[in-house]
Length: 388
Image (cartoon, rainbow, N blue to C red):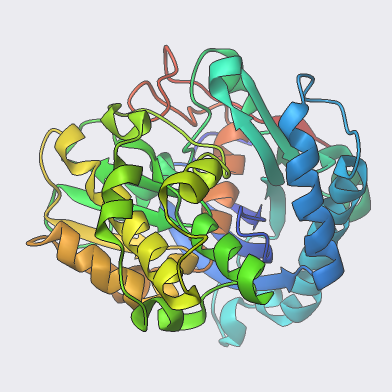
């Protein structure tokens, strides 16, 4: 296809919260977002989540990113199957929309799905060892769907000495071009791991992982109650923050490092148990302390930026946690903190949209990462293209 051809792309994201597969449609030329389209979601069943959690443990000793010992092979099959089912359900639900956009008479038909961006499930991320592992069989997915699939987005960046994360900043930059907010603008994704993109004028975005996101909170609540998360932040709202524990956790070396930097989902797991006082904390106090640590970790990135952001737009699962949003607003004041929905975006599907955008960029061999976002030596493209 010629340059600047607008494509229809589906992005798939199964994040570190292990809740399910998000799917989102985007019309893009890989440079600007031309239009958003319908979204979908395929949740992981409880039995599937159990295997995925086992895979996280089994991945700890990996030295070969292609190896699939223990639960990893079964987990990869689950991720691939769930992703295929997410796309197939989306196609069935949106046949009429694809025929005529939104069902509006006389409206131009959107491009069909030209490519699928398949992130897969991250089970290990150790860029210092030049090792990152995302489960998901891109070639099998392409064969099942009969569509080109771009996958394994992070490997090239890590192999070149970059952090391999975050990869969404180039999409954040495209979004920021069409939103009226004062700059510097920070776009914060609160998934299992939290990452931020700082956008300031025409300079390349500055980005990094900043802290634990929802991972510590989710795991603590799951261990104590069996529930997947602190729904609505209600447990944390009822608890008392152990400020001494928060200070101890903020003393970790990671927080002294400037961007770019990245994290494994379980990077703070041991430290939280040792320094977080969780064993003696009540359910509510533990949730409150981990929520406060998550907010404080975000705030700790501000001194590393050239200028403090004037506004923050929050996406990801954490955007649905009012207690976390309140703590963020307190620690980031006087900057404005708002959710992606207030900016006209999607909190739940932004990362899936991002991988649709990245898939088109990968097809055109445009950069996915930059020295200022992952620390890669030069702007780099990435991804592997599988065709049916």
